[in-house]
Image (cartoon, rainbow, N blue to C red; front, side, top):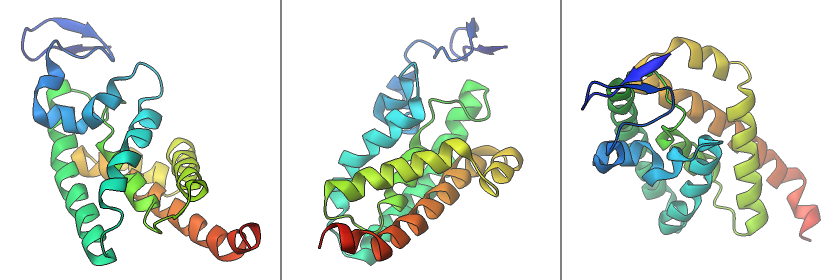
Length: 176
């Protein structure tokens, strides 16, 4: 299967980006500032790239924090949808804005130590990769940018719930 380079008309192997693709700000954001262009495990790289950005607004009061995350989701629906249409691939592996938003949701408990950040990363990646129900069902059925975004949001919510339970039951004993 090949994708057509929308600027030159050349057929490119799947996964190869058209020349200059990331110069477009929409594509650059959808590809997580280039982190999604990594040849292997772009979702993992995108999730890692989301963490330093999270640190820039994690200190904000919760209502503002969640408003930023909600806005990032809404913008992400458009970013991811446009980038997928331009690439002529439903959910190109390099589109990682959904991982950014997913990580920001998974980090919503505002971990105050590196162990919490690492647990959020591991739990989110676990749910995003394994895709248990309903994540797999949503991933297969929802079209466009909304479909690209929503399965990661559900994975992040599942991770957040697990992190909450870990924080409630396990972490107090570990750090006491």
